[in-house]
Image 1 (spheres, helix red, strand yellow):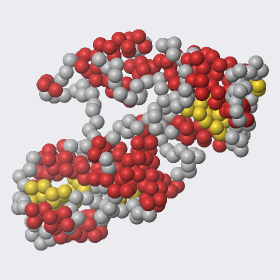
Image 2 (cartoon, one colour):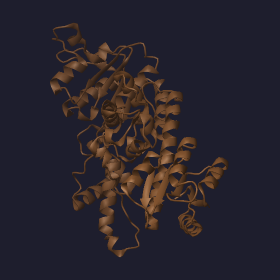
Image 3 (cartoon, rainbow, N blue to C red):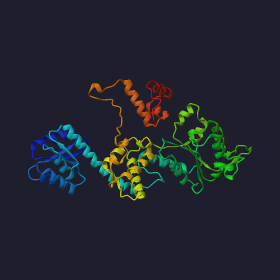
Image 4 (tube, rainbow, N blue to C red):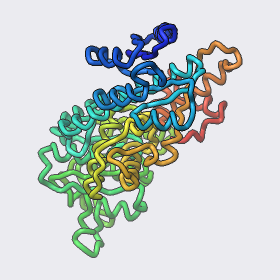
Length: 453
């Protein structure tokens, strides 16, 4: 644990003992035996947290806390005392204390409190920085992010925009695949022509065929032409291509490859001029291996590919997006909500976001509706996010009772990798160093076939 701690207690021995124990834990510690001396030091040096006794000669811990809160509100204060009662606790918190600990205490208890206080300060600074960052961040069309993973997405969109070749956009549900497709269209020479889309999972096979290729017997001009022809000069988005019925796949392959469509019931093939972009949230490589998706069609669509990362792999992008959503929804609702509290930011960073950006957006919209203060509080977040605890594979411990057999370690790790890849077995196998058949055997052995994405 890193951090710089100022200890204030009129008992010199207590200061020396706490300072020594804190240094053992990797932190820097200084101490003073009066509130006045502590304030003088704070005027010269920066500290991450102040730990002060409550009852001291001269300036009390409550007075010191009030002075720090007035002059250095960015520094959290932990108050410790042997006179623990509700009145003292209330007085300490009202004076601006971050935490309140009663003597006698275990050193681990105060070390934990110091760690949380340092994290609190760090997150508060991060939230302020994020507000400035969101204001200065140049949006990439409707996409927002500063992580390396998203920078790669932006680079690929710009590179592929100059081409007319098909593009495959992959990613878990809620990662923004449609936004990426629209960004690709807007940055291309086709941006002033139509952007049309169809969800391959939402339309039945025969209806989807007519919608794409048109129909010689169509009642209207729109039904006769179909989306390939109506998107002339522009872009056609085939959303959720992984759900395309097997019977339609050969016709789609022939159309995209030959750039000609043959409406059902017509013997004449008609050329089209539309850029094809396909998206999928499914593990399409597995579908190819299992014969559910044509390899030739996958190779054609996936020659140019953009993989959108899950939100859990985007680091502080979650906070940047959350801040952006706060500003958007608070303006829409006419509420004076300005950002996130450090505690809410901590919960947002610690959550896995299985629903990705869409889930975060819904979460923030709900939180803004519930918010009563200028910053979103933890209580404004959904219960599953407030109470979320991430699971980790522990491979080192001092207590033998915490150690588990190697099979259990492997099971937990395989499960974690599969969840991290959103259920993508091809990607999981590559990370684990297995071939696909070995991965399937492991999943069957450990009963993990039904691991949720």
